[in-house]
Image 1 (cartoon, protein in one colour):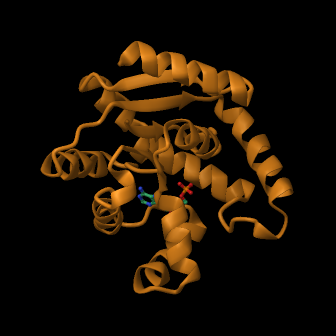
Image 2 (cartoon, protein in one colour):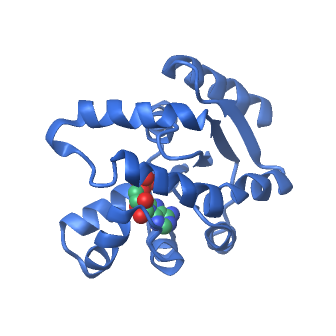
Length: 192
Ligand code: AMP
């Protein structure tokens, strides 16, 4: 199964991606995690991405497209993968279509977690409180506001993009985690 997860920051994409990963034995590919690892390791990509990420802006399409193109052809992706946080722009979605077509792969669904944006700030506060020392530099209320603005301007258009190609599956992401998980399973089954 090859899936994309869509939704604003704090919508629960990472949580649901990890559950899907275990259920389907396929890896979760989070471009945010891969970029954070690059920042930590101070690779050339990481050094360029550090300040952009701390501000909550998007790293350039070319950089993330290349990371994803190289990652999805690795052995552990043979049975599928869950992309979390990619694509984030229409240009990335178009690049992904091409990357997958070139590899002879097709997308099963773009799964949208629909959330009430007013509730997201509270979720980020909870995530900060639970993360202890491992707090993310961009997990502040101001950075979240900026990330939400970036999401609305650059990423939300992907909902229409995937609807247009008949791949969009939407679920209510405001329910408790296990209900969202159950709704996702039912929606993916119905879409298959
Ligand atoms: P995330 O963990 O998905 O919230 O991503 C954290 C940060 O990494 C984002 O705010 C961006 O700065 C960067 N990032 C992650 N994925 C992408 C992407 N697909 N395109 C551009 N920047 C990204």
